[in-house]
Length: 330
Image 1 (cartoon, one colour):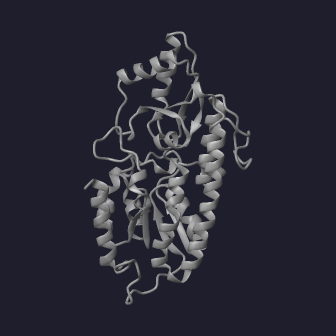
Image 2 (cartoon, rainbow, N blue to C red):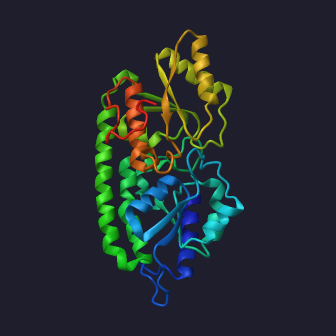
Image 3 (cartoon, rainbow, N blue to C red):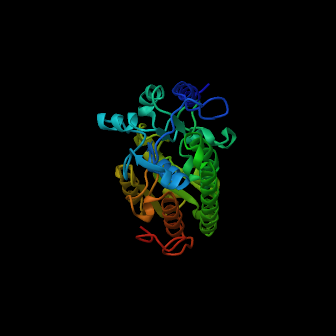
């Protein structure tokens, strides 16, 4: 049994002890109704956005990790623990994305219901980690179909806490799933316009495995799946050789990862007479600023697909799927 499965079993035990889930998920008869809106703390902004789209006004969502925050390295401060223990529900990604929070989540599950979004995804559709044995790649949100698959099960879990809103939650999940289907079709369409020999996505760390698998791109990350791993000189040299021999013209930086290693690639390629440009900045483990289009999951993915398509020689509308991107091509 992997670490995620052990944590999930303990978290479910905590839920049952708290009296909020019994058997198939019904609320125990003696449980006092929770006040609305439900106070939900999400670890990442992506998770918070998913909860908010499904629950609407029935929840107040507080995301611990904002723009530019790396979830692999995030350690909760005392103030974050206060936010977590004061929640009616905590929702996290899982699959060890929030590895340094794992102990805190285990302890918390004895007091507060805790749910992992990744537990709603068919294990047969998960990718193995290329960095760590017996672990999964946690970046599931980069395949829009997987993120959509979590919507309806999450609505069912929320309904155990808000039984009077069960119908509305199910309807919201269905509507949002439809929006995500449209997003998936857009992403697949614009990325398909990239010439075959240019379909290589080189990024700061290996966060885009699901993205590449879903949309037909070869993905090369300088660092491994977790930014806890450091890229050595040999890895930099390997990727520089790839850039030069395959004449790859663009690499990408990420909002939540240092640009140092990407700069080393560009300099290394230049030393061998090959010019490589920064194709744009991608949202990998964090979304954009709250209140912006890129600060939503749909906006985040729209931005990434549009920037990648245009930088690698494909064609995408300047403003993205909805004409709402703040800075096209950046």
